[in-house]
Amino acid sequence: MNRFYQILFIGIALFIISCYSNYNYNNVDYSRIDIIGPENSSVNNIINIYKDSIDSKLDNVIGFSKGLYTKDDFSKTKFNSSLGNLVADIIFRQADSIFYKSFGNNIDFVLQNHGGIRSSLLEGEIKLTDAYKILPFENEIVVLEITKEIFDEMVLFLSNEKFPHPISGFSIINNKAIIDTDRSSKDKFFLATNDYLLSGGDNMFFLEKNSNVYHLGYPLRDAFIDYIKNEENIESKVDNRFIRNE
Image (cartoon, rainbow, N blue to C red; front, side):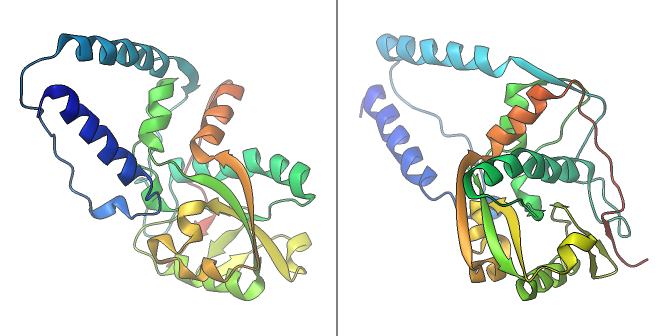
């Protein structure tokens, strides 16, 4: 098999794999695949044209981070992370206006999975490539209509997890949810999350019991990029939104 067909085969294989966007990537082992065979200068020239263009765009500076933010700076008591909080708050801010304009309602809460965040946000210039490292999966934001019972089930699940899943719009203090007065009297909530969790990803099967699903057509990574571009400086911190064992 010559080099051209090897590249074509790998491209088709990667496309097929990418179709399974809800697959759990946590247990995948990655290794480099070397292409063996004679060099084909015409193929290399085509690839290099696109590679140089992509590299140039990924190196664009889109913002500035005031500190180092990571998903691993949580503690046993303060069960939330600086980067997790940032991502969850970004989902809330960016998706709420779209949801209201499209469906006439506001988002109540946000839930993002810990495993969906794959890198840290370093201090200093934020490049487009950083967004792809932090949020590498092709997930879109969806809004689920859930009952109070499903919300309570979600809180119990989150309280018993090994790693903190980012949340926004409510707090969890020693396994008890704290929500504002306006929402406490509601019998249904609108929860923004990503489409991987929609189908029970990361064992969040309770989300499958939603009453309705609203598709915003807004990729999670795009929301992150849009927010970074619109803010002068990015900052976040571990706070008191998720406290346990206190």
